[in-house]
Length: 385
Image 1: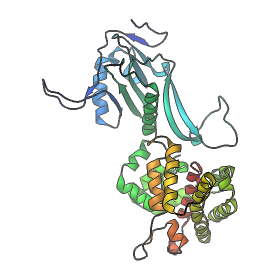
Image 2: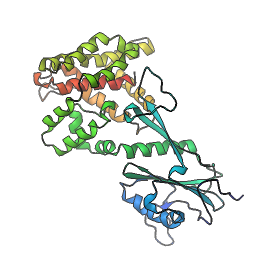
Image 3: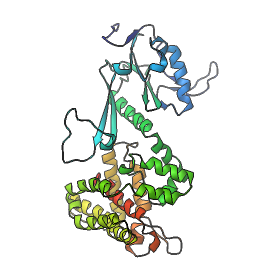
Image 4: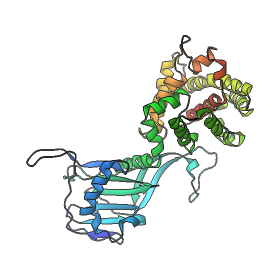
């Protein structure tokens, strides 16, 4: 059955039935690996190699100059025809998770970056895509590009899974939109230096401060004075909306007096206030984990190990995918090794919940920086408990 041109897009004929791209050098007459499905970004050299080949086969059909194209979707049909859609001919719909609010979001209401917790699927709407089609999708996010392709030789046996495709595109969008975040996570020495000082890509830091912190630690110059400038942003006006949502959950509301005492101590912006904030809030982190388990299961958990395992499961469930902005694997590791890490009195004593609770942490480690981190840890837990 021949495909007919839709009301928009470009109809193309005599399209070679692509089965993928060579994944390795293949000698004449030899067998080799072919990549049928893939996702690449413009940060990778392979992206540019693949785009050169696609230009020769597909994108040469576009009637627009390539430098005016921000998005192109090629829907390739089994009969050797296809449809190509450019820029706003495709409706891109992002499935987002919105921050907790007592006020519902109305249809047509503007959504700011600060409202978004996470990005799930990226759906392509307003175009006809069937289970028998193959896809090529190239799109721009800020100053970077992503390329996704799915070439299946036998669609009768393996139909196009649109839901799986939308999830993959959502991951691609996150990786491009937050490229600085994911790049820092791949640099083990940088990440270790930051987490050893108590930092993590908390939701509240992803609005820009995490990238600034990563730059500071990467450069390694005047780290503490530059970090202090970031701390000054987290004053009463910034902290109040972060904290106000906590009381909507019973286990947080039960600890409101204790948590507010610690928060007010932090906001006092004194050395004494930082000590009081740390000694008040850090023990409540474990208290919240225990309260959440008791509320859910009706029985306490005697071992911290079990509490952290339960938290890890909750983080995975809420996140839904490994590249979630909640960073499930990294956060679970951070909670286990940094927040609840062991300390050795014979060495430099790490600032952890245990060293604080047992009175082993050094006096000069009770800083405003650590106090803010305690608040941000509790805020991160709010989304999981």
